[in-house]
Amino acid sequence: MTKDAKISEECNAVLSPIGDALYVIGGKWKLRVIVALKEGCKRFNEIQRTIDGISARVLSAELKELELNGFVKRIVHHTQTPVVVEYQITPYADTLSEVLQALANWGTMHRDKLRKER
Amino acid sequence: MTKDAKISEECNAVLSPIGDALYVIGGKWKLRVIVALKEGCKRFNEIQRTIDGISARVLSAELKELELNGFVKRIVHHTQTPVVVEYQITPYADTLSEVLQALANWGTMHRDKLRKER
DNA sequence: ATTAGTAGTATACAAAAGGTTAGTGGTAAC
DNA sequence: GTTACCACTAACCTTTTGTATACTACTAAT
Image (tube, rainbow over all chains, first blue to last red; front, side, top):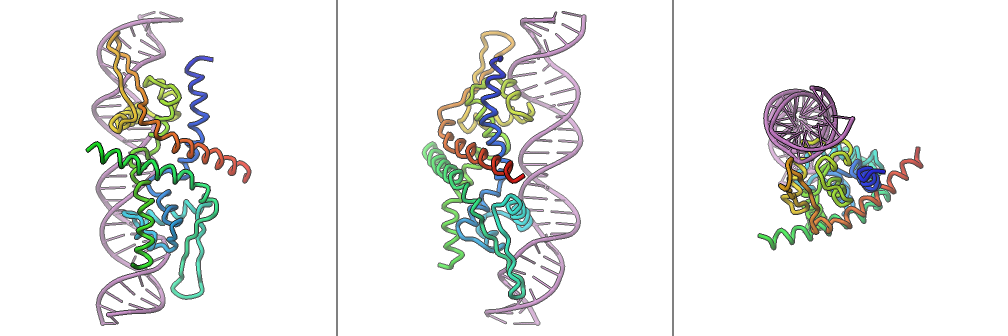
């Protein structure tokens, strides 16, 4: 096996799961929406107010994708009019806690580093 | 303090560091490039061959950004012509190991789950 | 009666990200 | 002598992502 092929093989053992992960939770908003739901947001407008800068159109699309991937459950309460819609995180979303923790830790560390450098 | 304001405050304590992290290492390619370099890739074309689907134009841009953020060092060897360029990961890139590990673990788990569901 | 809130969708547009193709100027292998 | 490798870059195009505005249809507060 050539050197290149060996590197490539080892690489892909790490690259492809990371690719799989980024495929579902990558992008600007997905993790943020999950965090917002985790922290107790349930209603559409509540989520939008919490996540700075997200538009209704994008939030709507993100919620749909997250539902498709099993992170979120959409519950419609027909008990009264107008309809009340509630979004719940599923237990599967909890499997992301390590990823979220690692990202939050690193983000905090990185910001501190930038502050000291200036 | 209202309920919404409280949720919002707690949320942002987690959301803003995650936002900071995604700002520098978010996007389709950054983490992949870092992994490739970590695993021993050093040369431009070698990296491009390893990361499936990346174009020279995009790789070039990603490497520049990574250099700017202190993850990568670009070293030009003028010893011979044509010039040989080497990319090295910096120790700062190692601070990402927890994030990478968490993502790779989750990606592996997620793929297994999808395989079983089908 | 007006205003705001609910949970979105439709439309149109702008910006960002990424892909494709071609090309540089040299060297080294077939 | 043709081809391929090296490390890119420029120009151009497409796709993705996001923004802004308006709208629905109903309720509750001012």
